[in-house]
Length: 417
Image (cartoon, rainbow, N blue to C red; front, side, top):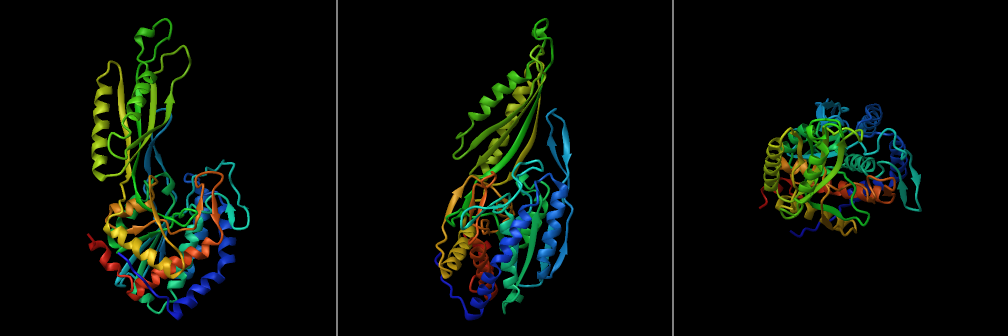
């Protein structure tokens, strides 16, 4: 699909106003990113969400802060516990408009409350280094600025939208997945504000992802006097890890990453507990069923061993997102808007996952890297390119303008084959 669009004089004036907001956006991202909002830091998340409420208030609409359900995890002793999540932020505008768009993002980061990476610094002439500057507090400001521009467009009445900003994306959106599904099913398309690559490329096809834990319980015994009476959970876990790693490439594009082993104890005691934690990523939705079946077989085999009990926890939280025709159609619109702004928008497949996976699983075509240009996310080297704040806000604004004017047919996307 090849599209071209022209920018009207009134639209150009609105785009120019975004340029005038550049210094405000940079100051705001510095302020926001100096707040630790790691996924489990409820106090920091609450502080960050309050600033989002204030910042987005100029848009109007109906605002609420949905509570998320608790989710389950396994601790280092093999016990299941519940994770509490901060509230989400939701803004709903013009539910009766003919076109409905879901804009999503997250305000949590991967950096824990006690992380050494806590502050923002300038890095050269056109970059900021800081926690969340790119992933994705910068993206939230891009979203906000684009929506402010839309609200001034003469055809804004044609577009209704829901803004959904979650506190748990970095830990798999386990609490917010229901909200994402609910609103994705109702939207014509989705726009998500993960960072693009530093060169401006967007993510296209994405693998699916699941996080799992297998708790292995054996039997403790004195390592010298009664070694033969023990059942060593660590030895079983070691064999399991080898088997899991060997599943990589058993299906095209499948990777299985054993990531952590907990358990064991004193050298003179046969260990009776081991917990194997691992991640799986895959290309095809059907492969999730295949992988789940393999894990069930493994659990049956483990439980068939003398004195060993095994339990599986976790599952797939992000189904694959292919570059199917609806997503390709929306990408073509994104590329056309970029061309009108002098940007050459490209895309690359990735093994990374985000809320875009969830939206597609609910049938919602989406483009999911509309945030700032940046890199080295999830590390202390995370950076955002300063000039990309207005650049990417202009891109999203122009897309929204063209959905509103009908130059981009939002209603056609779901029916593309």
